[in-house]
Length: 77
Image 1 (cartoon, one colour):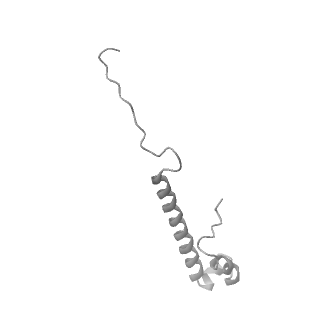
Image 2 (cartoon, rainbow, N blue to C red):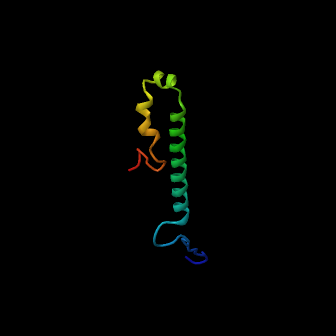
Image 3 (cartoon, rainbow, N blue to C red):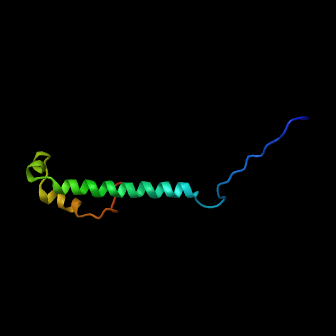
């Protein structure tokens, strides 16, 4: 149409591979999840025998979970 100016939208993200921002966010989420797992396992290990008994567990029940490495995520796909 006469008198109208056209504009071209340019996508500045890379055409191949994962966008850097998405990669950084995924890495941040993974590090956060690993920290949470390690913290939960530390807290579980620090519970007294009486507290464990209150929730129906013994020290032997929680030992395998508390010895798992931080990267061993039971919810990982």
